[in-house]
Image (cartoon, rainbow, N blue to C red; front, side, top):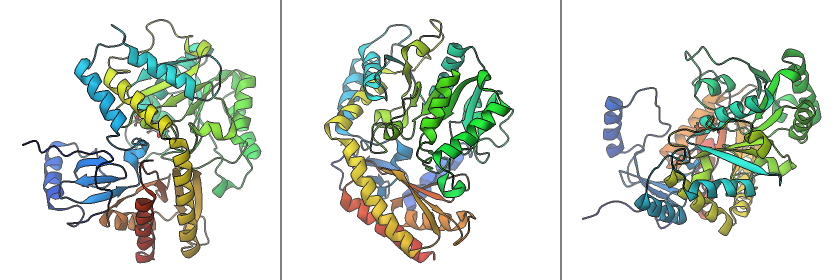
Amino acid sequence: MDTTPTGGPGLPQERRLVTEIPGPESQARLARKKEHVADGVGTALPVFVTAAGGGVLQDVDGNSLIDLGSGIAVTTVGNAAPRVVERLTAQAAAFTHTCFMVTPYDGYVDVCAKLAELTPGDHPKKSALFNSGAEAVENAVKIARSATGRDAVAVFDHAYHGRTNLTMAMTAKNMPYKHRFGPFAGEVYRAPLSYPARDGLSGAEAAARAIDVLDKQVGADNLACLVIEPILGEGGFVVPADGFLPALKEWTEAKGIVFVADEIQSGFCRTGDWFACDHEGVVPDLVTTAKGIAGGMPLAAVTGRAEIMDAVHVGGLGGTYGGNPVACAAALGAIEEMQEHDLVGRARAIGDLMRARLEDLAGKHDVIADIRGRGAMMAIELNEPGTANPDPVRAAAVNAHCHRQGVVTLTCGTWGNVFRFLPPLSTSDELLHEAFDVVAEAFAATA
Ligand SMILES: *Cc1c(COP(=O)(O)O)cnc(C)c1O
C-alpha cells in the first residue's frame, strides 16, 4: 500500500494537537538526528513533518500545526502547491539535469524572462540563476565589481545576507552566524540603517547619516556596490523610514555605485507588492531573489540592468546546479500561482488582518514596543515596558508557548526580541485568526 501522505491545499486546514509538542514519534526521531546530524544544524521547532499545505504542517505524531513562518519566507504559494507539483513532476520525469553551462534548456530562459517582467523597472534586464540566496548575493557583488572596476561593498547595520564567507562578512550579527568562523572577506563596510522605532530619524536624515559614513570612511569612488534589504529579514523586519531608499538610490546613481536590492526574503508578493522596492518606486540596478521564488525548491537569481549583467566575461558566472531544470519548473509554477491567484492582493489582505490583530495585542501588552512590516511580512518588537531595552526573554517564552500550542512562530532581530509573522499566502483567514488567538494566549500566559 502506498502510504505516502499527500500534502498541498487538500490537507485538512485545522490546528489539531493529539500529543504534546514535540510528540513521542518526533522525540524518537530527534534522538536519531542527534546521532547523525551535526549539532551546528539547529531546529527551531523539532516536530518531524510528513505533509504540508495550505496553512498547516502535519507531523509524524498526527498533529497539525498552523504555519506562520513559511519555512522562512519560502512557501509563499503554499507547500506542495498544485501548479508547482505538477510542473516539477513533469520536468523530473523528462530530465533532471544537464548543467545549463553544458547544454541549455527552456525552463532557465523562461524564468529569466519572467524575472525581467516582474522585477522593478522597465529597462532591458538580464538574469543569472543560482542555488541559494547567499550564492546570488556573492554573484551580485562579483558582477558589480566587474562592471565598476572597484572593490568596496557597502552594507548596513542589522543586515543578513547569508552564511558563505563573503556573505558572513556582509551579515551584521555575530551569534550564531559568524562566531569563530573568521577571518572574513575584506572590503566590506557597514553603514547605519534607518530604524524608525529606535533612531527617530526621517528617511532623509538617516540616508544623510549613512552617506556621510560611506563618503568619509570608504569614499564613494571606491564603492562597487551598495547592498541593502529594502525591508530587513533576519535583522528584525525593520522598514526604513520613507525616503531612505530613494535617497540612497539617488546618491549611488550620482556616484556610479551599483545599487543592489537584496529581495531574497521580501520579494515575490510577500510584502503586498511583487517586490518591497515597488512600494517607494525604487528601481535597483541589481536585485537578488531566492526563497519565495520557487515554492520550496532551491533556486536563486541575480537580475539587473543588461549592461551591468553583461560586464562579466563569458564563463565568469555559473555553477553546476544553478538554474536546475526541476527548480526552474517549480519557479514557473509558483509564479503562475502568484499571478492567477492575485497573491499580491492576498498578501495585502493578510497584512491588514495581522496588523489589526497585532494592534489589539499591543493595546493589552506594553512589552510590545513596535508593530511594523508590509503585507504578509509583519513583526512586533518586544522591549522592557517604557524603555528601549530589548526583551528577548519574554520573546522566547511567548515563542515556546506558541510552539507547544501548535503554532509555528519565528523570532528574529539583532537582540532576538522580534516576532516575525510570514504565513503562506494560501492560509485561510480562519486559520490566521486561530493562530493569533494562540499568540494572544501566549502573551497573556507569560505576562
Ligand atoms: C535568507 C536570506 C539570504 C540567504 O539565503 P540562503 O538561501 O539561505 O543562502 C540572503 N539575504 C536575505 C535577505 C535573506 O533573507
